[in-house]
Length: 334
Image 1 (spheres, one colour):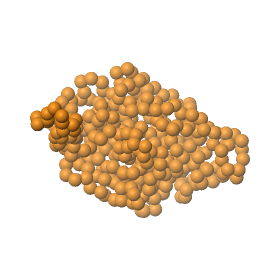
Image 2: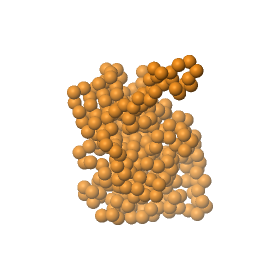
Image 3: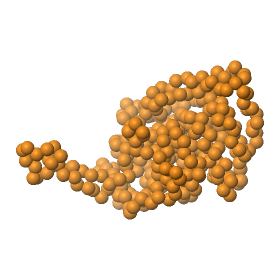
Image 4: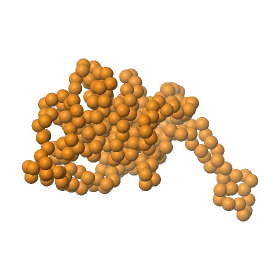
């Protein structure tokens, strides 16, 4: 095997909050035919080793990207970033309009076809809904609230909240639990400063399920000042962080995107699982419009292009492989 290929570095990050480390991939001794599908539209999956090489080369080429993310690193905006090393490009960041303070949200435009963003935190969930309201968006969630280690990946911005108020019947000797009573509210988000209220409508609907994964659709009445809109959320449940997902569900999720709404796609950092959905959606749309089938190299180039707007897009070779799987699944269904 070519030693230069054997020592091609890729990023390995155990958590988004940590800086990437170099991982020198140790490929099998058998040569991988890198030219097998070069220049040819995809028709079948390459080997896992080839996708490892592809991601390593994407990481290597990403070193030359000129990136300016100064707004997200300003002192007044630092608390709005879930991960300090995932910052949107200043030139393609989403700018909030109806705000009296900072117009910053950790979100990036992908051309005009989608927005990629982080899983909101408690202090930014109003911003997510404001962004969806202002950009006529549909929220696409591809992360659970917690990972298997019970680490939060997104705050809950979709369920009705419950407030705790002091109990008038509490007296000395009562437990702490008895001192407060739960008061359920009708809203999921209420921001008096913004004049924003988000109220869930009806019961969430399971659209499709596959194994232990499913897609759930929810509706919300969102009020901003005197204006009201009905906004929607699609949730692909049980897609683990750094893990795999059924290509069938990825395609179905994309098929559910309304043509007149902007997909606002988030996982936890808005670069891994969200990147898979955004890139797959890009090529599936192109196929639907003019029958264009990309080459593997064109998919790689699109990932690098999106990394100019949001660094770190596609983190694992399995995610890179899943993009091709989803495109092929869509083509085979037509």
